[in-house]
Length: 99
Image 1 (spheres, rainbow, N blue to C red):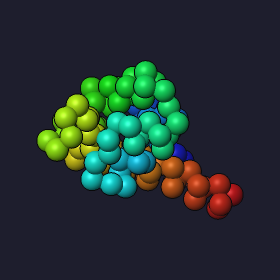
Image 2 (cartoon, one colour):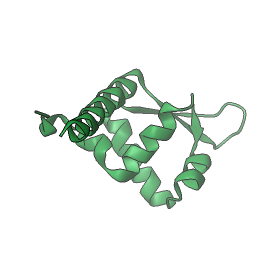
Image 3 (tube, rainbow, N blue to C red):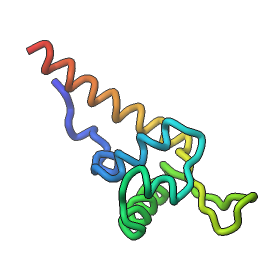
Image 4 (tube, rainbow, N blue to C red):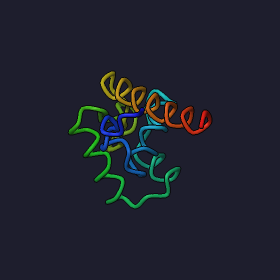
């Protein structure tokens, strides 16, 4: 039986799940790139990134080559949490397939 209480509620929200998926696929993403790919408003994206940063899942830093450009990257803690989240989803899919 799957323990649904183990689903990370921070990651599970659609916007944050989208951000984590993109960040897991690349070393870093610029704010404008995330915004364009996710089709989010500035405020919505900032709010989700802030939630992920507070949780320790995402790190933010300034691009040294392009001033005023914020870059975002998944942290080791974020990568671990995302992998655990995916394992729970995989278990759900397997349970449905087996039933």
